[in-house]
Structure formats: C-alpha cells, structure tokens
Length: 321
Ligand code: GUN
Image (cartoon, rainbow, N blue to C red; front, side):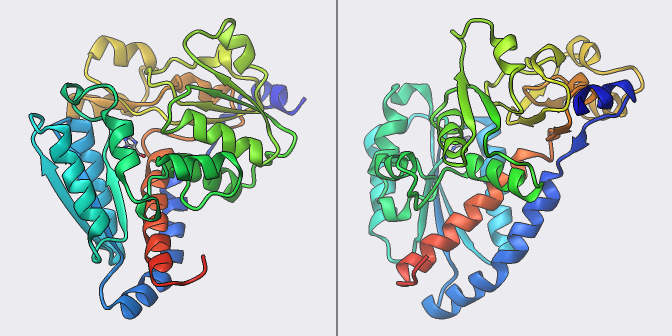
C-alpha cells in the first residue's frame, strides 16, 4: 500500500502550497481586471460591511482590502460599531445593492451576537444575488446545490482549486468533511459531490468520528477546534485539507503540539501567539498531502473572492461568464 510505504520510509506529507496557488490565480486575473476597468471606466469594486470589533474579522477584512488593492480592484469597507442595529446594517447592504459603483458585496461573519441569531442569514439574504460574491444568498446556495452555481462560496471554491491544481483526483474517492457550517462544511460537501466523490459529512454529534475520518482519501477539517484531527483520524497517504485558523496564546498548549526542535516554537516566543489549524501538526507524518496553516486554504479564500468580484463586474458589463 502506498500509504504504509510513506510511513515505513518516514516520509512527511507533500505540503500543498496555498500561497503559491493563490498567487497564480491572481496573476491569471490581471488581464480580466484591466478589461473590466477599461469597459466600466472604473475598477471592479467590492463593498464590505464589517460590524463590531472582532479581532480576527478585522484581520480578514484588511487582508481582503490589501489583496484587492494589489490587483487593481477597489475595496470599499463600511464599518459599523458593535452597538449598531440590524436595520442599520441592512441599510448599508441596500445602499450597496442600489449603487452603480459596486459590483460585489460581502458582509463579514461572524456578526456581533447582540444582533441576534438570525442576523447573518437576514443580511446574506438582503444582498442582491447578482452582487453576492460570497455565494451565501439562498438563490446562489440553491444554484450551488443544483450544480449550476454562479457565485460559489470562496473557501470551498478555493479548496477545489487547490485540489485540482495539485492534481488530486476526486472522482470515485471517499471524501469526509468534518464540520457542517454554511460557510465551509455544507458547500464544500456539495462541491465534492458534484465532482463525483463519495461524501460523508461529520459533525459534533457524529459517533465514531475518527473511524469515519480514517476512511477518507480526502479529509476536510473545518470544525474550528485547534489540532483536533490527530493521526488517529487519518488514513496513511490521505490528502488532508486544514480549514481551521486558531490563534493559540497558551505556551503549555503550544509546547504540547510541537516537537522541541520545531522552528515554530521560536515564532511563538517572538510573537506571543501561534496560528494552528484544526489538524494536529503530527499528521504530517501520516498524510500523503497536507495544507499548512498559515499558507494553505486561507490565501485561496481571498483569491477566490477576487475571482468572484471580477466575475460580478463582468456580469454587470453584460459579458457572458
Ligand atoms: N468569515 C469567515 N469566512 C468568511 C467568508 O468566507 N465570508 C464571510 N462573509 N465571512 C467569513
């Protein structure tokens, strides 16, 4: 068996370099951005609504803004305080909807809990589906479920790009998704199904989670718990996609996850925190291919947001896409 050979010879997993693949995708977009800018006499423009002061969301929105700027897009960020009402947030979305100067709209999740549990779906549904570059509007999610998507959610699209561009076959393969979120788990399961994988979706109530995960040729970890997926969850030689982004600040926990020789311990000592995924670092010795954190799925999410924004601009210019 190929997998056990990998282990016998002590080979570590192939690292799937999301940073490089995202850079390729952005390079491929340059000519399309120029054509849109010429035709519309303004760059493709993304409106982002950021409500509250969640530190991670702040970082994500800054990253999206910088990536847009670097590619020649315009990113227009509207910030509301965490005390803002849902009506106020809806007003911003409706303004973006009516605007002739905005092609795409994104409401950054999570929203402050004070807005209520339905706030996210209310705001996602308020977005004009032709500007819904996140693909979370029920029309776009429904189209995705039917296999005829216009805008597919960015992280799942990025995962598929990463698998395709790394020449990892999906047809007939067993795929296991851990996590059933609207943003990643559910849409990526649908996309893998459309690509002829046999898909199992696991979640917090799943029995025998590690045994199910171990059946996967392609394992997607998107549950949001640091280093939860240990080698026990991974069939030797499997492809493991780590969607988690968890910031650890506890030195004892960091030391328990990494070997004493790991250079990442120095990163932790320097910064006082360390980003780890949902997959335990030791899985590198068992998996055949693995996405790193950081530098795996994250950059692909941002690149696919750029792709969807350019697509929205092309659609608004009447180009067939
Ligand atoms: N929060 C975490 N990921 C995402 C995403 O892909 N889109 C939005 N809008 N919010 C997020």
